[in-house]
Amino acid sequence: MTYKFLMAIGSVFILSCNSRTMHSDATGTFEANEVIVSAEVPGKILSFNVEEGSQLSRDSVVGTIDATNLTLQKEQVDASIRALSEKTSEINPQVKLLEDQLQVLQSQLNTMQREKTRTENLLKQDAATGKQLDDITAQIDVLNKQIAVTRQQIVVSKSNINTQNRGILSESEPLKKKVAQLEDQLQRSNIRNPINGNVLSKYAEAGEVVSAGKALYKIADLSYINLRAYITGDMLPQVRLGQKVKVLIDQGRKEYKTYEGTIIWIADKAEFTPKTIQTKEERANLVYAIKVKVKNDGYLKIGMYGEVQLSDNKK
Image 1 (cartoon, rainbow, N blue to C red):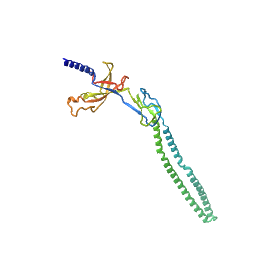
Image 2: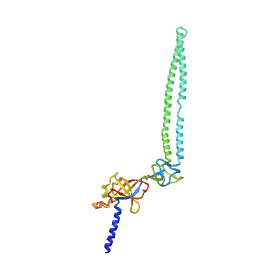
Image 3: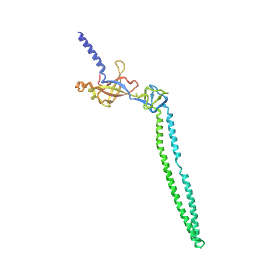
């Protein structure tokens, strides 16, 4: 009698449990894609406008880190670039001296050529000697050679100065890259929020000194939230990516609130493998994880339990 009573109680308990689980094919908890925002440069936090639960927009600046050291480094490199330009030689002062000498020689040459013409005329009238003409001709030859040498000196001077200046200015390219690097780091001193979402946790406060990579806060986009549920191996052929399913959450002791969800991920391996060799019945004990994306109306929270109904004919 007692045995039959216990069996009846057991049957009622099993029926009670089954009546609860008949509503769903899988159960799990809600989770979101969380992003931990960290400091990108070391320094003291000057401002930090982040509070747990607050909603932040993408690319908004929520704080700043002291970057005085980076600013001083950039000014130092800028000064080095300006100093390089001052080391370059001006072409005009050096070449102008040679060009002035060339003008004097050219003037002397013109004078000697006129003198040669006059001497040639006098020689025709026997008013001058041949030696005088030879002396003038020799002086003209000397002046022509001096002019040629001076012109060559001008060309060589310009080439040397240009080569020297190019060597000096080539040193500015690495310095310009350094400036660009420092400017990038200065931009990173602004704490910029990466996504639209709600702040889940806050790990730092204004006034603290942080190192690069130090976590500042955690944020997640809760407009859509994922239900990570588990199905058995024998249910795996019934699910596919992109499949629309119903998601149920408790609304009271016997009622459910229903959402529409989409399967966005299916695990390719079982979470648990009971034995190396399984029978057909044991294969049903394999558990596979799936993720169902659900649009959040504000009631869904991270860590809440949810159930998945694969088809509409569930009773």
